[in-house]
Image 1 (cartoon, rainbow, N blue to C red):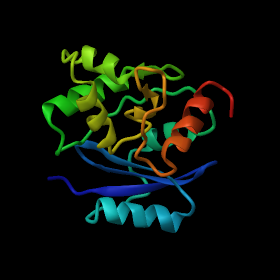
Image 2 (image 1 turned 30 degrees about the vertical axis):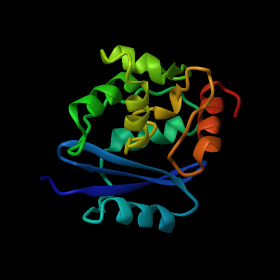
Image 3 (image 1 turned 135 degrees about the vertical axis):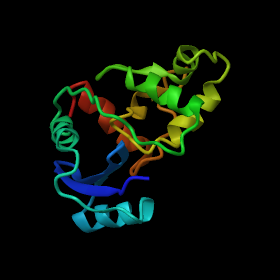
Length: 169
């Protein structure tokens, strides 16, 4: 196992953090109210991570750009040691949902070859430790409803992200 580092990133919505290793990006902590809150969230999620202000500079730059409303694509290796093959395939399918677009849980289930597994796709999205990079906020219920969002701010924050990508924020 590679040593974990974390980096704080200032955005217009607050201080966020990324956690990674030599294997890739492990976790994204969504914007918090302060650097202290972001650091605390890192400690709760990845207690062995140590500060590394030079960690994954391209990811940090793209996250800053994303939160200014810029269209970005994240091409970064993921370090997800606890993901199952199904979960990894769902996250890969989610990563293919373009900026400003949405898909449904059922769409992703079909894309991973499990057309009846929309609920399992939803569970994979709920366990996503890499929001924005694995853009689970772009995944909606089949009726077009927002569904859930396990990140800070819940469904309200999901709506903010979707509106930002549509150029409404």
